[in-house]
Length: 70
Image 1 (cartoon, rainbow, N blue to C red):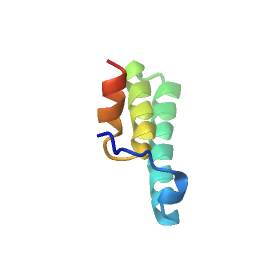
Image 2 (image 1 turned 120 degrees about the horizontal axis):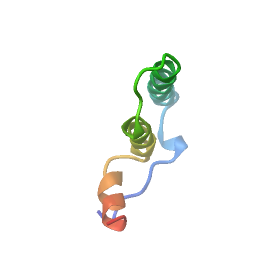
Image 3 (image 1 turned 135 degrees about the vertical axis):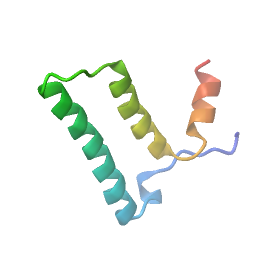
Image 4 (image 1 turned 90 degrees about the vertical axis):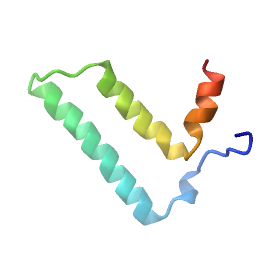
């Protein structure tokens, strides 16, 4: 995995950026809606959002991070 290079914003097309932003917004909105309705939200929900954002760095990011964060 030494060849891993995190993606830059310029590596994404405008269509990809829009699709990915829409997905993140939907995930954040779902969290907000459930929380403000008094439904159960927990640390897993926050962690899933974190994972969704870090995934934007590209395939293989978790292999590298897991290697360094052990």
